[in-house]
Figure 1: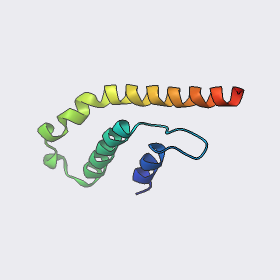
Figure 2: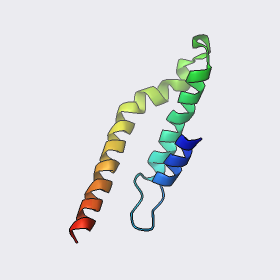
Figure 3: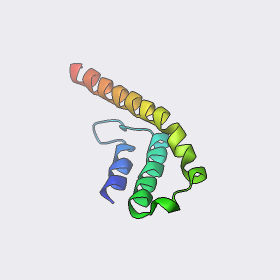
Figure 4: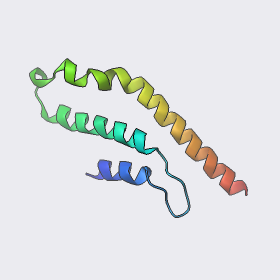
Length: 83
């Protein structure tokens, strides 16, 4: 459960910082977390392309969004340190 808790905390503002990721990205990452849980406990014959195609086809875009939001968060932190 700590993975889900971490995503939740990252999507909230802290007392001295903004949110690390947006609620939309948090929702999308939770879908990957749920898939990871399923994949680790499933047999390969239980995998259904129609159920996982959306996640697979969107993974590059989601990773790009994650990088972008991390960069924005880090830049805001650097700007705050300079002030």
